Structures are given as C-alpha cells and as structure tokens.
Image 1: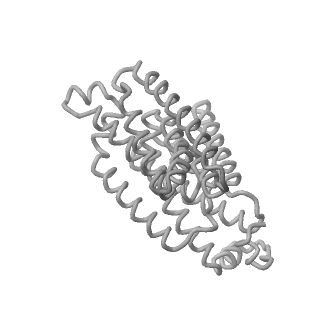
Image 2 (image 1 turned 90 degrees about the vertical axis):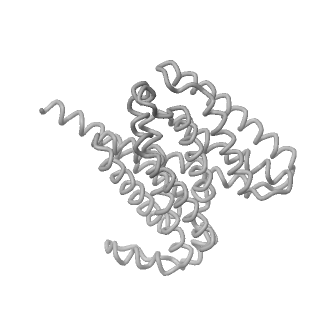
Image 3 (image 1 turned 45 degrees about the vertical axis):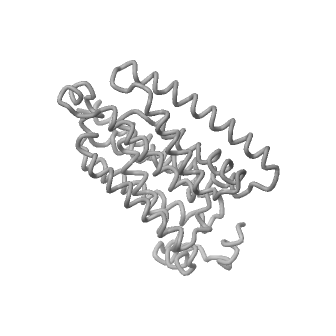
Length: 293
C-alpha cells in the first residue's frame, strides 16, 4: 500500500456510492487527484479526438513516450525534469512534422519517421539513465505516473497548460477538421495543411508532456486514444463526438481513482481495462445495430 493510501485508515466498503466518494474526498491528496484527473481527461480527450481522426495514434504514443528520455536527459545535465519533458516533446513533434502527410502514401512515411524518433528517444533515455548512475525513481515514475502525490500547485500548473493548449486548439479546430477529413481538397482551397499538421503535433506533444507528469506516459496515451476511438465509433457528429470523448475520459478517470482508493492496485490498470471493455462494447453494439437494420 502506498504511504498516502495508508493515511486513509482502513476505508469502509459499502454499496452506497455517495458514502464511498465522501470517504475518499476527505483527504486533500484525493481531492487533488480528482481535480488533476478531470483536467487531464478533458485535455487528452479534446486533443486525442483530433489525433484519432487524423490516424496519428502512433505519433501520440511516441510523443508520450519521449517524456522518459526528456526527463532523464534534463536530470543528467542538472536541469529540472519538467523542462526536459517539454523540450523533448516539442522537438519530437517538429521532427515528426517534417514527414509528408498530404498524400495517401504520406501516412506510412510519417509512421516510419515516428518509429525512428521513438526508437532513438528510448535508446537515449536508457543511455541518460546509465550515465546518471544514481537513483532515478523520479524519472522512471514518469512511465506510470503519480496521481496520488499531486500537490495543489501542480494542479494549477496543469490547469494553465491545459487552458493554453485548448485555446489554441479551439482557434485551429475548424481548418484542422477540414484538413483532417480531406487534406487534398483543403489544400486546394488554400488551407495550410502542412503548417496545421505540424502545429497540431506540437499541441499534441505539449498536452502529452503536461499530462504525463501526473498520469505517466503510458496512461496518458490510453486517455488520448480509447475515449476518442469509442466516441467516434458511436457517432460521426464532431461536436457530439468530442463531448462524448470528454465525458468518457472524465468518468473513467474518476471511477478508476475511486476503485484504486479502496482496492489499492494501479489506477492505470482499472482505467485501461474499463476503457477497453467500453470500446469493445461500442464496436459490437454498432455491428449488432447494422445487422438488425
């Protein structure tokens, strides 16, 4: 059991959900976990919806993973791990953005560049850790996150980063949607498809870097992909699909936090398992409706 959960002094299980929530929220670390979870779910949901629509899940995974070498490299040179995470994420996004995206073949070329960036980043991360040669628990924790150790200041920092990313995304949303659905027609009508693609990758990198400090680079990828993929299976209407993505992300995160508080197993397991079940149910439900129609 984690030291923070040990403070919970043997929480009482019951069928009363309100009472279960009340017990969990009597501790400040759980309140901050719920707040940060909501912010991360909204941020990852909005950015992840475009990522899934543009078939750039592999790029999202890579930008989440580079948190590890970014933090390790920064610690090695005496800088803060947070600064390294953001620098590596933005640089990786710009490198991936150099790959062609406007043609059908372009997506495979982007995947090749993305895979190369990911392999190099992971190798560099292991090298940085080896050169550092000391305890790197704080760095390796970036892979799995630390929801229960979030401070109020970290929540506020996360809110600022999320508001900045979402504000830029809101400005780019309409042309980005056009360029994502039909890049050839969008380019013919004067939409700067290449610049939008690179700009979106930078937003994706910043969002992954901000969220991974709390959720871990592995868990933030689950929040980027699964709620958005499920919502796009259920509806093709963009506004409704984005709203459903955010609701699924927040609901799954809060439910997983509550279960993890009482069961004391990794939050990521509960979140990804529940998200997978919901996604499979959505796919099977859509196929059943088509068969019966």
